[in-house]
Image (cartoon, rainbow, N blue to C red; front, side, top):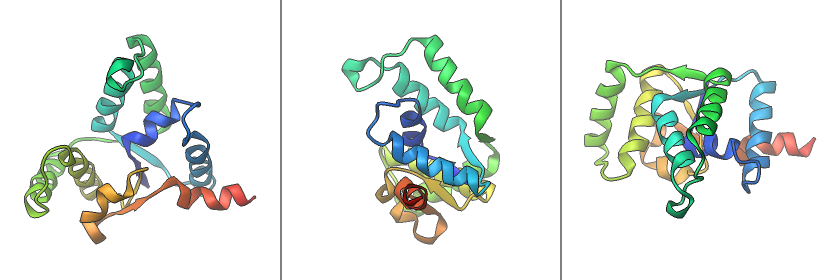
Length: 152
C-alpha cells in the first residue's frame, strides 16, 4: 500500500495541472502492480480546503457540489485509512521527538497514520518535507514510479 499526499489528490482533479500527466503515469504503474493507493480523513479535509478556497487565496474556487463530486471519486477509488488512538499516539510522539512545529504538524500526522497502519510509502510531490523521518517512511515522487511507464 502507498498513501497519497494531498498534493497528489488535488492535482488528480486538475487535468490542466503541470504534474497531472506524471501523476497519472505513476498511478497507472501502481494499478498495474496492484498496489492500493490510500487516503486519510486529513487528506480529504485539506483537499476540500484547496478546492473550495477562493482563487484569490490560491484555491480553485469550486462550488460545494463540485468539491463533493471530486471527494466522492477519491472515496470510491482509494482505500480509506481511519483515524485511531494509535494515530494520535504516533503523532504526539513524532511532533515531540522530531521537534515538529507550524505547518509541518500536518505532515507529521500523515506519517503517524502511515506508522499506525503499517504503510511504508508516501506518494508526494514534496519529498523533502518528509526527509526528517529518515527510515520511518519512504517518500516517493511520482517521477520515480512514472519512469517505467513513460519508457513504454
